[in-house]
Structures are given as structure tokens and as C-alpha cells.
Length: 182
Ligand SMILES: [Zn+2]
Image 1: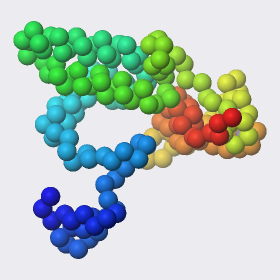
Image 2: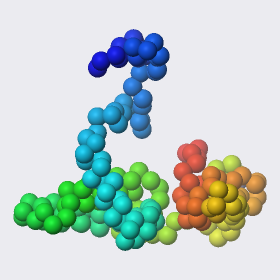
Image 3: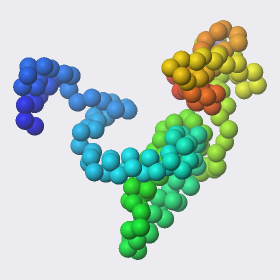
Image 4: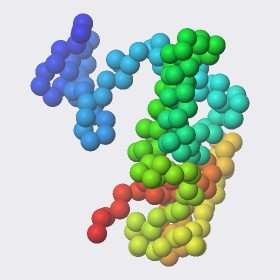
């Protein structure tokens, strides 16, 4: 790449600025966001805008069954293969794959192994004191920058999770906190 020298663990740009080598994604795998097709990204973003218009922004994050995402993605691909160009079937298919990947990695609403429908999000036990919160989770609310934010609060030890934009998202973020495995 022009103006881009690899120096072991670092890269140096022709301006002289250095950065650490390729940024790492999950499990230390290198990531190259710069190689993703900007055309595909734009069409995907248009699909998200369409969805936001119809269902509200971030509706999909509430949880979609993976089987449903994949079924619709396949339907879009099949329709595209049949010659239909009435909507952006490829971008719609990618949306379904993106949501599937999201729910595969996110501890949110999905159980991708059983391919079952949405299950309610239950708070995991407190990472600090181990208190089981299924019945008695408490929440702290705060308003800032015009939004209401909610975080899970452990009633026993006072540990709190990150703020989410509603209780469900607060639980998802709380459940994301690493816990020591038995
Ligand atoms: Zn606790």
C-alpha cells in the first residue's frame, strides 16, 4: 500500500506517524474494515434505513430468531436468482446474515443452537458477589443527552452494569460482563 511500511509490530505512514500493526478483532484475528466493499456497505446501510423507517431504528436489536433471519435471507437470494430486481434482495439477504452473526455472538435474546424463537432476556448472576438476579434485579435510571439510560444494579453488593437505553439492553450489557467460569 502506498505510504504504508510494515515495521515488525508497527506500520509507519509517509507522514512519519506510526501505529501498531493490523488491528485485532475477536480472538485476535486481524480485521481489515478498509477492504469491505463500500458499495455493499452503502446498500446495506440503505437497507437498515428502510427497516428503521418501517419498524423504528434498532428494532432488530430487540432480538430476531436466527432461523427467521436465515429463512428470509434465503428467500431474498432465491427471488434474486429468479430474476426479480424489484428491491435490493442481495442487501436484504446480507441484513439477515448480519443479524444472524450478531445474535450468534451476542448473549442477547437468541439461542442459536436450538433455533428457537425469542426467549426473554434474564439477568445473569452478579459477576462480583454471585447473587442470583432473576427475580429481584433492580435498575438505576439516569437522563443525559436527552436520553433515558438504565443499568442493572446488584441489590446486595451495589455493582452496576453499563448503561443501556432500556432495561432489556441493560440486562444484555450486564450479561456481557465477563464472569469467572467454574
Ligand atoms: Zn453483587
